[in-house]
Length: 329
Ligand code: SD4
Image (cartoon, rainbow, N blue to C red; front, side, top):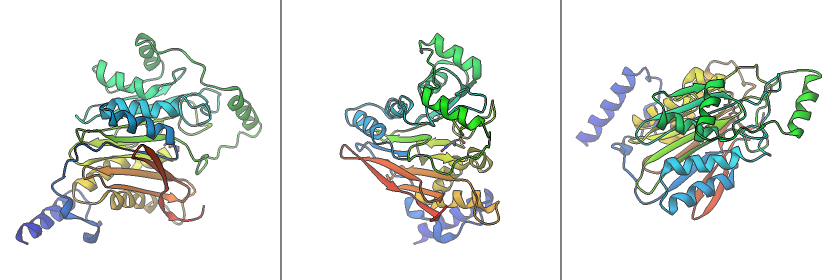
């Protein structure tokens, strides 16, 4: 009992120090401290409905692949999927017709890499991994990132498919910029993997918002916003309106809340509340988060319904609707 109340006090005073005093004590779960490391049970979860991507990463980890390689190969499935119009090849261009991709990766050692506004390269999460492992830097953008890709043997590929180009030309007739709330059930893919050693890695890859301004970069390649991994605590990743995720540094916030004892679900809910707190009434944009902690608990929350997540279980991909603040858009 004494230890429990000491822990409670420690958590509450640490939260006060961090300016988290608005968090209700009931949302704090001190029993999750200290973190328990899961070993031997690979686990994989991603944003939206991406069964093949999840099965790829889950199966790889079952056969011993580490979480970093698994997460890169998992998201690569969506990067290569021409029907996913927000990731990799077949993605929606900016308003000038250029498909520009953003991605980041973070591993169990707390290392990270990112690429921003990259053209002509399909597997940008893998490129972000190369930035992490083979350069002295964390972020490369634009032409520099593309040059680096060719040096590393990536192929130059036209990312703009005929169908998507036709849609963009149609859009040009009005040029009415209106970000969509949920896109076709598969969208930016953020994936979190825990391997047999209990090591966590994450990746996030996207083309960002369709018909964005040239040069616009969202949250997805920004460590702490679109993705954050802490091997001692857990990991989180985001989808939706990147500008809003950046303003609250959403994924880092979730991991920090978990560090101080919140469950992944409570932490995702608190992060979404932070996003909407700035707006009076129902926001017209979507943001969704998923999170996992080292005890294997998961969380997911979004502003509007329609967001879903997919996780790996016994060789299968299970897709579940996320809880949300608003049930209708
Ligand atoms: C961005 N967060 O660039 C990305 C877009 C996204 O679902 O996730 N769409 O803002």
